[in-house]
Amino acid sequence: ASRCWAPVRRGGRAPRGPSGTMMLTNKAKQQGPRPAQRKTAERPKLDDLIEKRDYVGAITLIEFEAQQRREAKSASGWQLNQQTGEYEWVAGGTVPENGDDPEQDVEQMRWLAFAAFHSGDFKKALDTYTRLIELVGEQEPTLHVYAACCLLGLGWYKDAEERAQRAPVSPLQNRLLFHLAHRTNDESKLMLYHQKLHDTTEDQLSLASIHYLRNHFQEATDIYKRLLLENRDYAALNVYVALCYYKLDYYDVSLEILNSYLTQHADSAVALNLKACNQFRLYDGKAAEAELAPLLGGAASIDKIEFDLVRHNMVVFRNGERAMQVLPALIDVIAEARLNLVIYHMHHGEVEEAYNLMKDLEPTSPQEYILKGVVNLAMGQALDSREHLKVAQQYFQLVGASASECDTIPGRQCMASCFFILRQFDDVLIYLKSIDAYFPSDEVFIYNYSIARAAAGQTRDAEAGLLSLLQTSNADQYRVDYVFNMWLARCYVMNGKSRAAWELYLKLESSQESFAMLQLLANDCYKVGAFLYAAKAFDTLERLDPNPEYWEGKRGACVGCFQAVLAGRERKEVLRDVLSILKSTRNPQVEYLVRVMKKWARENGVNVG
Image (cartoon, rainbow, N blue to C red; front, side, top):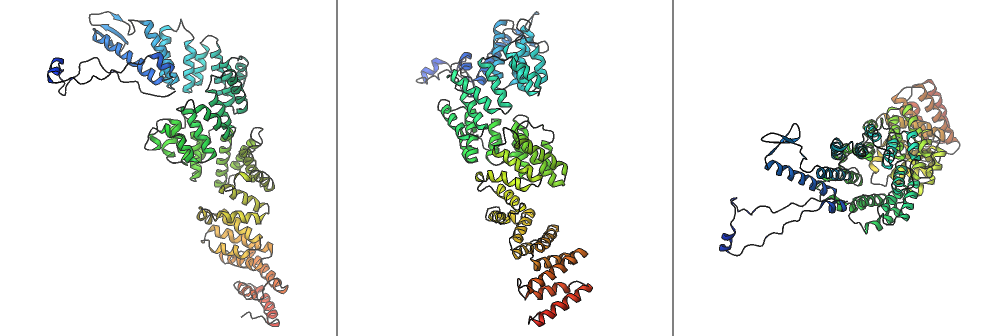
């Protein structure tokens, strides 16, 4: 329903001049023609406001009229006792505040509670129903179930259930208890109240909403479609169907249904917001933001937007802009706010903050399972914790193996992540290859796919993928990425480009990471027969750490390089480098190796200096 302000009521007093004195009509005639009188704004009728679903306007009107009655009573000689809530005549005696026409006041309170509930002000609605119950509760026990609905909206589920049980048995009570059972995860009660539902429109709508909340989107869609066929006038059902299709990732279908609804209700906040979400999934944040323009209200910044949902979505559409100012306050208001705040922390490398937000959350949707898995994976890598990695692997497997997600893109990504943690890279590639076409330019996907290929021995494809990342706008970020450089160096070596791998090492600053790359180059080059660069790597390692194993590796690499020269697989000139590398070590074996190599060089006319 559109939200508007109640019109300001004019009239009732004679106009006043600049000094505040009352202007006399006959004097105005003497001074000249009287200016045209302003048309008095007509007070809206409550029935019209309710019919238009202008609940804020209805609340304003009811409270305004109540205030008028209080002022009229005070002006007539009654005074309000703030302690008892009753009006007292100055000469003695009491009369209740609603004493003139109790039935009218009770009726107004009913409408006030109704309007407050439908405007989302559940606290005001609850307070009003509580006062009604005190006044007429014994005659109308049904008021208890209305109060319980308010408690449900406030999230006070235990209180809501207790209050609902005090009301007489009715379809509304059953639907309310049905939803409370879902909110409290009580499966036995859920089935009990499910069996009491009937084939009425209200009960079927309630059932469809539970299906939706339990991520059974296809079942919810079937019910909404059937109800729509039976009730063509229920146009809002189109929005529910579109929402289900959005959840099923059929964004184009969802848009088509929404457009037909928006032609009749162009100002629907829910429909416009859903359309923006579809545009975000299909295109980008700018396209989504354009759809929300009618709801922004000319706000100067995101945190100045009036509607919580729009404010939340604008943060998402703008890739986290003002996230720390907007999302924390919405965690208990919008379920996705917590998840998006976690994503924001992850994007900024704040793993511990993300973990603290997720550690106490019991996941109920695929998105929550996935995000909990990602956060545990990041913690496992940061802390080298096998426990966190195991938890992450289990969450990914739960999603990827579920019947509802196994054939979706997120489901296959989860299975790939599960096998990645288990280091079963051939299985990783099966799942990543099946969704490769959907991520032609996604850098994160290319990064992970390339590493999986390298780990599975497909180093040529892996090298091409990694090098393509160096052509992107984030190239500088990859050049200083330790994992990226390690895998690229390995691909170079395995693809016969050991010199390129060595040059990659020379570009690194001296650090623990460069030491690890030296170890990788020494062993991988030795493995593929690139003995010259293996010797150089082992020689540098020996200088940094005089470990006997490094000498043994260097000796073997030098002998292997000499053998390659003898076999014609290596240039003779490299013997000079080999001899220089050997002489850097003080070991009795060095003299013998040098003598043999020099003798062969003299006999074959090779100048080794």
